[in-house]
Length: 247
Image (cartoon, rainbow, N blue to C red; front, top):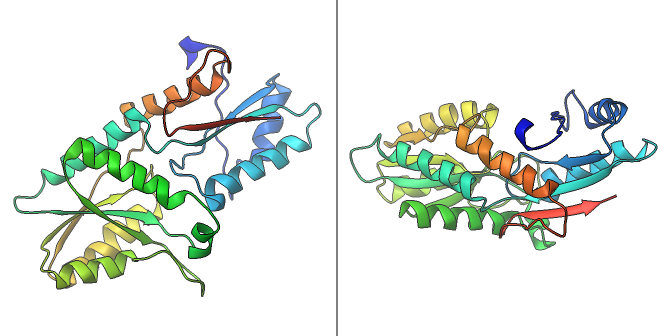
């Protein structure tokens, strides 16, 4: 972003330092009066992006004068993001010699969120549709990491594995569709638990590499920020990328 203007780039976390209140104090003390919030959740949910922006607004609310906040709410079809994911899928498919079933595994949510209008599943499907248009490879969506006694989105990832085994599937390429970086849900759940589970059912499971610091993914984030930084009269919002300006 350095060639594109005067930007101070800082990371903050929802549940671990550096927290939003700490980062916003530092930024406003340095003279920043406009904050562009870029969540690393491509798909909006009140439980993830919504919670993060609520935390950001609480942090801004105790600062005088409060900075303006530009929310990049979701980006399920951002072109460079889709290109990067499609490249990961093609790389993964090349590791197999026979037919492969692509499985998109997303973080689960309670069903009641979707019933109340949360767009999470719809935005996941938007990304998957864009990927299938790029790769020509159909996939199946399932959900991981559920906990607690409420009803969660279905099918769960373990249920999907059982279903595919019953259908005679031999090879699975698992795409961690709602995760952009490696963490416990990719490195442990997918690469260890689900891989071992699939192996016990007679299937081979490989996963696509996380986007992490891939240059094309970083370029996607760059474009999202520049678009959000553009004055409303001249800037344009790409289709399926949602930007909201609040004070």
